[in-house]
Length: 254
Image (cartoon, rainbow, N blue to C red):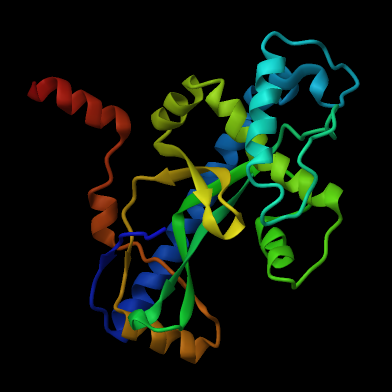
């Protein structure tokens, strides 16, 4: 998957200034998102959708739970064998699913100057959200690349924590509008490096950019870290539009 992002020339002094500026904004955005997800936590109780298909001390047979579990099984079956080499059939009731949501910054890989040199790019205004769990996406990736070994149960739980949220949102579309009202774009995408695992992403409307490949190459060589964060500039804040404000302006201009 290719990601189109604006590119700009930078000098070292401007980069250092904007990097500090970006880090301050990212900290604010992260705290804001954490607060939103904590407040919205009661909306995402998995048992409300999956009922007796998930272990719980008060599991009930919920309307539509059969359909929801079938949807979950379908998503799981599409990725479990390749690349994870897991059994194709889910056993239920599933292990308990936390109602708490967690998030991590969205990452992707670019090849600098169309060479084999790969750099991880971090988007500080876009996040992957999932139900909380002990096994991260990076650990799943380590399993695929042979850097780590995890039990089948741990891998299944990690996958369920993502696809269960996908199913939950598919069966509760109003949640998408709710996040839009809070200023986020909610999307369901597939991660190619994890066998097209479907995940939920949230993105702020704050624009970011990257400097040239040569500049990124120089910075990563000096730091010794093969990763680079997208940059937020002051103009992005000036152009930031609240979703409600945008709708109101559309009404006035029509």
